[in-house]
Amino acid sequence: MSRKKTQPKKNVVPDPKFNSTIIPKLINNIMYDGKRGIAAKIVYEAIEKIKNKN
Image (tube, rainbow, N blue to C red):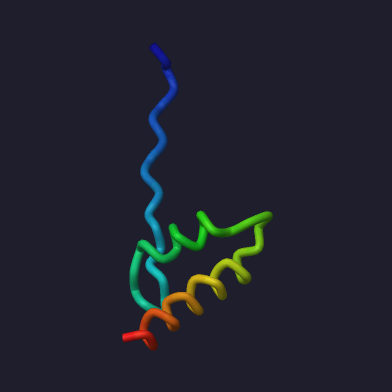
């Protein structure tokens, strides 16, 4: 049995644009080589395309 303490759960900061906690997780999954800005741009453009499609 490990004697180390369990790590506390990290609070996910909600996205400022849509106030959602799912979008930052999606950006982190898409992010490659630490390029968060590019990943965020991809996600936001995809959301805009979905909005315009309806």
